[in-house]
Image (cartoon, rainbow, N blue to C red; front, top):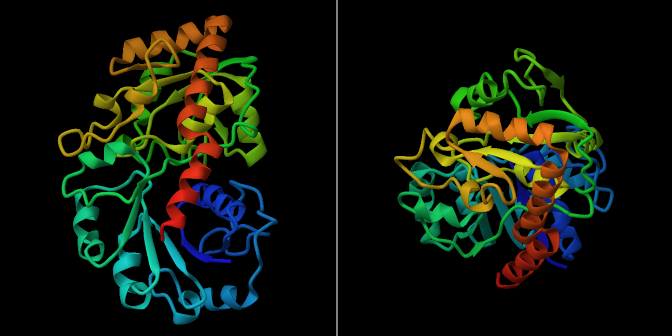
Amino acid sequence: MKRILLLPCHSILEADEYKLFLELGYDVFSMGSYINPHQPHDNKRPPILEGKYDDHLISVAGVYSKDNLHADLVDPFDIIIIHHVDFWISNNWDLIKNKKVVLRTIGQNTSANEFRIQPYREQGLKIVRYSPKEENISLYNGADAMIRFYKDPEEFKDWNGEIAKVMTMGQSMKQRGEFCNYDIFDKATVHLPRSIFGAENQDVLDWGGQLEYEEMKKAMRDYRVFFYTGTQPASYTLTLIEAMMTGMPVVAIGKELGNSLFNKEQDTYEVGEIIINGVNGFISNDINELTEYTKRLIEDYELAKTIGKAGRERAIELFGKEIIKQEWKEFLETL
């Protein structure tokens, strides 16, 4: 059995890919929230009971961080998968270079990241991209595979839309300003019934609190509309997939708003290609149109149901678990 050392920086993605690699038959140790998979460090996702508790590796990882790995953390593994953070590559390259090292992008790469990983790309670093739009990043270093994030359609399903309100979700949205496009959500929905969920949003109106995992899935089943603000410069986010996969109709901001800080540098916003306006969601760069789309969906349940159903079909097509699982299987077998 081949072994994977996972160096994550996003606990939700960590949980998703940890589970997938286990299902593919790999032994996995993650130096993140799931360092002990039976008792994860945060409550955003449940324990992974199938994961192995490794007392020795946990004790070593308690002394040595992802910034400064130790041979005891590297030697037992065949493959090292690093989520986004390029200095984990540069700081540890001499120690890890004889392993199969994979950089997994998560939607936050800019030309600066591409510049920093170039020397390691030339020495054998593999790259798994999360969106085809990343090829528009300046100094792009290519890809060995393009594998999107995923969600399980058997887990995210059964939208009912009984709560005739719009919701959005994100962490510290107001404090993070343009990177989370909070002001656009606020202006577009200020006169509509709404809720905003996520940690550290106490300073915004209509804050609904931080949801536990099952509560989050229930909110997506029950609320009528999801308003997608994006997180710059990401092509898309896990939250968009979760909402669409559930069958929840989505109103999304277009790329002129959604990637406003990066449009001149990199055309990486993909939501306008995922959502076909008026067919499987609504998308616009005009705040008044965003308001009108949201209002229509709140008031017209049958329209919301039709749009949500088409959105779920699109999400399964692009982000369904079995498709992504097969793509990871084929890529990992090439290493």
